[in-house]
Image 1: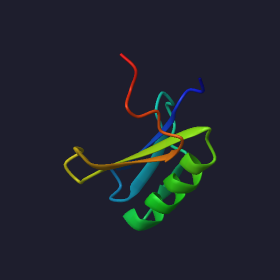
Image 2: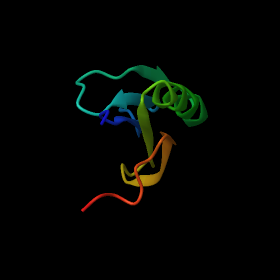
Image 3: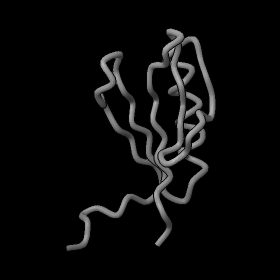
Image 4: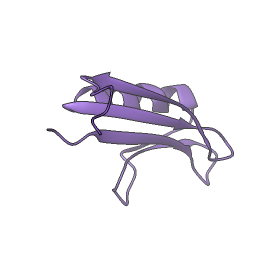
Length: 77
């Protein structure tokens, strides 16, 4: 089974938004507008065998999640 590529859309200290793959130190992109960061995150997630984006608010909490490609639901176990 392929590992899920998870991208987080988070606010950065400069007032913009970052797209960062889970487990990476550096951001995949920096954007002035949240909508631009979401578009980039969706594009990156859709290129993964299993992709997901987690969109955070200004407070850092996850607001919503979207999964792309084949989501193994219901989970086994």
